[in-house]
Image (tube, rainbow, N blue to C red; front, side, top):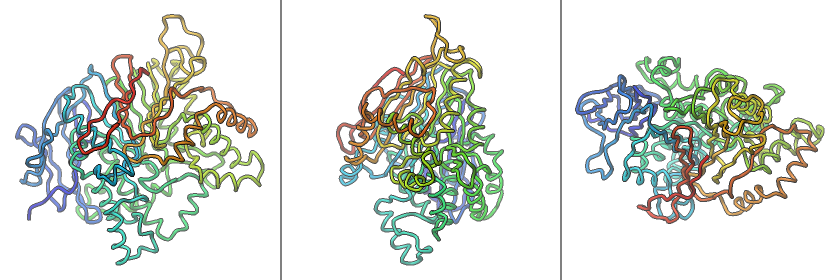
Length: 564
């Protein structure tokens, strides 16, 4: 029987001497990676719930290499596909002295740029980026960060919706809705549909990609609050949903984030890799424990790309939600904060903190979230807690501003880093985010934001002293436009009357004022975008690409380019 490639290849973690290639196949086999006609890596498939996967590790590579590769399953060539108009897939290892380019974005609904999809969701910026990169040479250290909502498990498109209806008729799955995925098989199909478009597939095969979940990878408003979690736990199908969602995320997204050494040290990987039979029960047990005991597993991960340290944070699964989990809400949880503090260190030219939800929101929204959390915690008395919780969930008040303990702790960590207390201070500290379905740049104010490198506490620098620049960059969505009424609300949130009203609310709720001060640099942009940051020496340049015209073959254009 000939084995076929069901999904992939995906080029995942790449460092100067190694690269990871992930594939899904339709039967057990040995996946082989060929470079220059010779086998450079191979691995047997492992099986989870009847699905077969392989992780191939290319090691002993040279920094700055450019290696076109092929994929064989046993002895059958399966990639590149015959007659493909796209260039060969290439493994590029980072060169230590080359500039680093980070592409980033979130919130991707696969439409294939169909006429209906273009009207409802706009141009697909992953497909547009593939078309752009297929036409221009890639010479720098290029990395793609997909920071949340790689799949929408609760807002499925056709034909996934039709498939779920048929599945529910045959087996209702404890009353599960027929327009949301619940089981592992359904998640596997959801990922296949999301990443099977030829252009997206080629992009993920040739650009090293890091990923992290946001709420829609599991369900809208995932872990917004303890009240939300209690309501979901009461649903008869939720146990299957959270187990399947986290298990599928580990296989399809997280496993490739890890370096070969980190993967070998992962106890879950060791048990599944060495199982020798279907490891679905192992994955299910792990996923449920990761949900039930967030401290049992770390989803956050780090990569150093040239002179840039990239810290990809888990702001969803590891949350502490107050109530019975403790008196203090935390967007990272205690273990997540400890991990971030341990890696938020000096000695790098640039430090990037990738957080699916923005750290620095339009100020009016930030004030609203801080006020809401304080009222939920009893700042206005017990009578106001219930209504405040309903407002929190109705308005999606779940970003860093709604977790003030975390916001202040991160701010103090950045302050120490910029002040030289954690080693040589970087030129920039950048927060990269998505989630909100509009794109913007927020700069910290010079008086209390950007700090002179090596000067604790922000003392006035000498005229020629370098400052560490702190900014928030948001690029969202890749393909999922914000409805017009919400666009109007977002524009108002950036206006000074709403900002002033927000300040009054936080004062009335006795919320401490943070040391970070920031402002939006220009109005928010509501079209589909993909962001890019180019790091070259101490300089950093932010670029946003969009497609001002719709169509299958339209190339993206620069919407905005600005020095950070």
